[in-house]
Length: 301
Image (tube, rainbow, N blue to C red):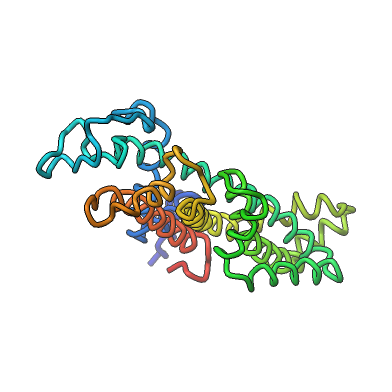
């Protein structure tokens, strides 16, 4: 009897899965992450097309419709679907424009903190020694202080305003990026490819930014997605205290602050901005959990 010829595997069986397909497989296994991605994409579209979606100008007042209820309650109108505030401004329009402001705050804060935090963590993990001790002890001091209290102190020193609030929140969340970048750099510097590049004559800048940093981006991306939610929440808290965005800006925290005295007789003025903050922050947290599952090999099933 002749031996059977070996069965050749098809090209699809031999080829490894595409990195994006593998990433999407792990990410899509988390249904909460998919829901978060959909909500984040929806909020981004709303913010992008706010001037065309909003039925009214966010700062336009109408003396005839003070504290008008939502359209499904008695006295409500489809002209103002979610009702109006104490000076007759459309709540839906202010929420839509507030989405743009909140996303700008979150993205700007994360961009500033991740840029500075990555540089500090990268240099601390690479050079080590006294410089590393000084940087990390400073970050530890910042972490020991309550984040919101520290942000309030910084804004109180700099003065109330949206830009100062964004800077304060960026300083508050900075230590997280420094610690993550430093830990990733320490792990990568001991690997063979870094040693080989150093033996080939690579300088410090090339080793840090061309060899090490590209392999440290996964945990920073995860932290950035979670950091946007933290930035939005802290900025809303500062706005609620009157230290962030100033009236008449349609920022969600400022909207809550303006509506405090109407909680009992006009529930919609407080409820809808609060729900906007809750849903947006929850969506970014779910998205961050999904990214962590997809990027962290220890969590891959």
